[in-house]
Image 1 (cartoon, rainbow, N blue to C red):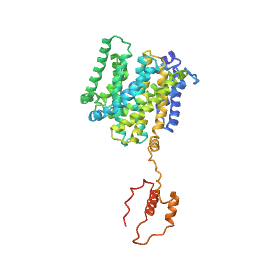
Image 2 (cartoon, rainbow, N blue to C red):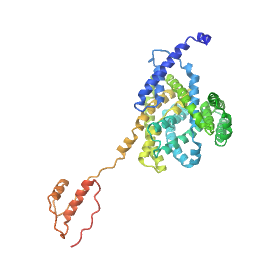
Image 3 (tube, rainbow, N blue to C red):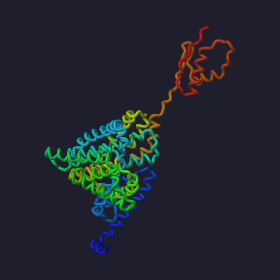
Image 4 (cartoon, helix red, strand yellow):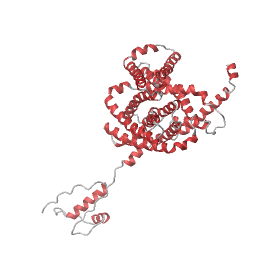
Amino acid sequence: MLHAATDNPHLGQDLLILGVLFVIAYILGRLGKLIGLPSIPVYMLVGLLASPYTGWFPLDFASAQIELIAVFGLVLLLFNLGLEFDQDEFFGNAGKLIVSGGSYILVNMAAGLVFGFLVGWGTREALIIAGITATSSSAIVTKLLIELKRLTNDETPMILGVTVVEDIFIAIYLAIVGVVLSGETEVWPVIGKLAIAFTFILVMFTIARFGGRFVSRLFRTKDDELFTVLFFGLAVAFGGIGEILGVTDAIGAFLIGLVLGATRFRNKIEQIAIPLRDVFGAFFFLNFGLALDATKFGSVLVPVLLAVLMTVVLNVIAGQFVAWLNGLGPQAGINAAVILQNRGEFALILATLSLSAGLNPLIQPFAGLYVLIMAVMGPIVAGRSEQIGAFILRPRRHKPKRVDHPDRPDRTEDEAIALVAGTADDSEGTAPDPDQAAIDRLVEQAMNDQEPPARKREPDY
């Protein structure tokens, strides 16, 4: 260790800076919790603060020092996504989930693809932009449902169902994107790579569905250390297999997480994997922020603001449509829309892939600024969705209609009430006065703030 430290005299300084950055992330994270901010934009902001492109941080820090750890973060993010995938829920209610989640994705994906072409950065860039704007952040969505205490809400199963379908879509989409970004232009090689990718996905889904008992035998150990080493090693190894097969390391990690989630050790793996995901995921988001050049935000500001507006509008429409499909009311649609509009890790993963594939460099600042805005705005709005719904959907109060008679002058409501107060009751057996009956109805309406009841037929005398 002494020899290694001598060979790399900057190691101590890098460790110090990295520790300081995480302490800053902790402080900002605590402040962010006061307004309901998730951790993703906080880590990105800290990375942006220390970015060599900004010059805002007094100490120099090379992002190359944490790139491999950031890859571990990416692998564990997708590994946990696969681990938490609820196969029983999906296969037990597949039809409804596919229609609900599929319609949500279709609306956002189609609009995102058109938007990507309108931006004019290129065909492959349009495919990336469509993916960035199409799917929610499962991490933020799940965390918001817990923090807002909405797990028992009527719309929560629908929201989680949409995220389940999005997880499958992400797996397929990443496989397609991996082939497209490989730069292959010949038809048959592209078809061959897609066939390999989909075969890999199909095999892993089959093992996850039917081979859970067999895979469980690999984890028969009471040693937590060896247990952790095994599943971490599998996550990293399958990330490598995914990269070799051309479906990206992220999808390889997702699929092995899917398989391990089908074993009887799922809960134990989750207990250990979630803290690992949070720590290594922080490196991933921090590293992404370090690579951002804030001076390029101006060149993507207009496309980002248009993308944010498009996302909000489409989520309002899709939220109401999905709520209607599930037999829920407008308030449930509003709650679903504001939670599902949050964007996060998947957008940053796509931006990272586009950067490594040599696509338009504006994709990265576009994704970074887009996620920052959505990840900050989304939780704040989500926390107030009930109030927003109450304001929009509040019942309209109707003013009472005036009762006019051709043989009487017009009276205001106050005059009518005063007239009633000063009018003596008729003796028993006296025929009711039509004007008196009309005034009685007017007073009752004013007191109850309801629509006037249907006029009863006056008795004939």
